[in-house]
Image 1 (cartoon, rainbow, N blue to C red):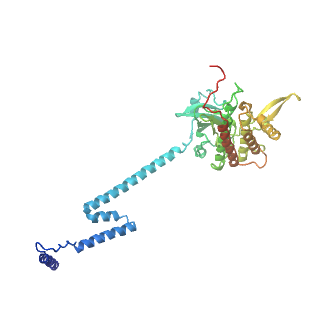
Image 2 (cartoon, helix red, strand yellow):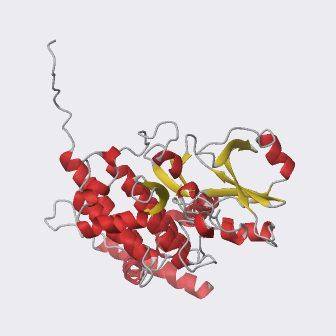
Image 3 (cartoon, rainbow, N blue to C red):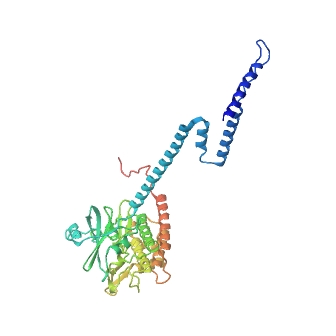
Length: 419
């Protein structure tokens, strides 16, 4: 170290003496030499710039720290840059964690609440001991259960059916816009009570189509509203069959609830086939919605029931009614399947459609829907609900386009009387 210092001292002194000898005299025309940078400084700048280029080309994440400390920032500058990077990383991690928690909370909020087993006393208190007036064509009680507006249905209980929390969890884990949300159930002797969360002003499809007090009234006054209901029910059944891996078993207008705004339909009684007995029987021990020869719930039986329901939507008539025959002087049972098949064969679908719609419907669309319904109710080659939902949805889109085309403009008014 001492030897190196001596050499450095001699080198500095020699440099000063050489500068003194080469110093120009006053008045001389020789230009003064430009002071040159020290060799070590040039090497340092060159190595610094080359290191920057290598790190930038390699994409090294430490290039920023290296540049800031080497360009004179000093240890404190390097520490500040490193601290800023750690702060930015910590902030990014915090924001990612918070966004992940928000996404998880949103996903949990979108899931349906698990159904509960209500005690019988709670249901009795909510319905005034089941003496309150029923809604939806006497199909359910409108009540409040634990702060929620609910519709309480009473169904015959399947003998030996175990209604427990595990069975309800299997039914309530699915949620779809065309399915009503199941709040809970209560087995009470020979009956089963199912509670659904429904919006205010809801009514069953049976009550929307037919009013005992006013037969000429219907809540589904337009063609598009009826096709909308048919599309909602078809999509709900398609979801039950091919996404939930289950069957419905009780498709009927009493199991379809229509609510405002938009007259959208929701399918109730999903999963009731596991707990409830078959639907109420009618003539000759058969329900008009039950497929001939089928005693247990199945997908084919659901497709058959939807075909009958679709014809009921189009005609506004009950699926089976009695008509007095003047020739035989007796009452004969008439099915909507028979009248629809006769209208399709005779080309008189326009006269067969519900007269309360007037002539405000596309006849070609009505004929296609009748064809779909008859195929659903056929004995052989019955389609699945994916095909049916696609056909009905296509007719719905065409009907919306037809409605936009034929509606009366609202930019002007017409007066038929003197002002």
